[in-house]
Image (cartoon, rainbow, N blue to C red; front, side, top):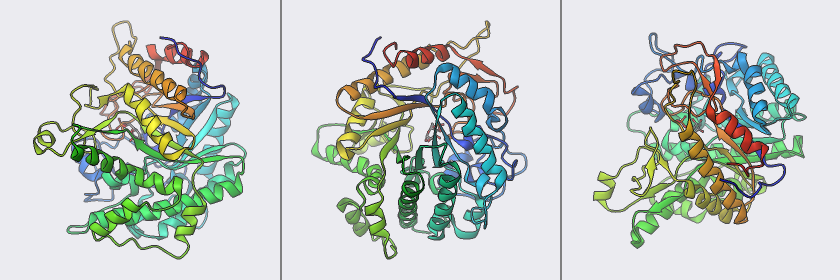
Length: 477
Ligand code: BGP
């Protein structure tokens, strides 16, 4: 399938997260993070929702983030492979606890700063732009224990210090930043999004939206500092996106879909438009939520909005007001979607909707009229190493081919998209399940769900396919 060439300078690449790739969880002076407390297995999902019994790793459980794929020691080998594919950008996150092991340390950890200096130097050696996520689901555990994490206003000050430290240290190396990964995930997986742990009987909705306010203020302070310290940098927000379709044309279903999308848009409306939207104020009133704001917060939000809208797209969503549909058509995702009978699903039950990618990109661009940056898209699948030692991941090529083609259509529609960093260009730990079995990569990593394997890397069939996509500016799909 061939396509109209993507714009010159389009940032083709891949995306990783520190906690899902680095490993070395207690090396280089790094402190413990929230994700380091998430084992694989069924208890993981409840812990991600803030039902946490222990803030210490438990003997005998397997914690996939502790070693992950050892990117901390192998990043040079991996970056050489990304360069071979022709990457123009690599999205990585900085682990907050490598820089401030406890989160409230009086000064940063030089070993941690040095690691990312070396990582960015390695990328720039190949002409690959670092695209840096400041917070990707890993809050220093000490901030949870001592302050209750983002429910506490003190986190704003700690985050501002952390972000400002990064901008000052890497101002000559990093020109693309984003604040919170999938900031809307706070509502669905509050321990992951904001390190929130709930006690029995607490008003979780009140705590979540107060924590959201703290993150939104912290994000605006980071935008302000980034523009002051690195005037030629771009700093964005980051949304777990995917348009919500109404199950029928019944007006109630239509409005339910509007409300579902507003649940996520709320965060980006504040970060991009600079104020709390009316529907949010009504939601707070209707639910008796009192959001504590400090003097100057609203002015800060208004004056320091983001430069671009970063987002992840895996699937579209659907919703209904019919109890029968809601009961019988549940879909596996955290957004409480109903399954879409017109679409196929992945091995993990995620809807596969390439056209939805074009629709979502148009929806975001219509709403915000700012450049978009696709910083996650990909297919988590079970890959098999065949007898010939190869991985014939044609199903992944198919998924990506169709999604990139629809992204091209969105650009033709006039949507400004600055780049595409597909999720997990190398197999890494799955965020939702902690599994290695849920693979996204163009590069296979020899490691299984129980942590067994050589960690050796091996190109899949999709490796040369993506190389050709980039080489041809997206015309050869
Ligand atoms: C997003 C996260 C990523 C990544 C992705 C895929 O929520 O930003 O960290 O994990 O989802 O999800 P999973 O790894 O659960 O398949």
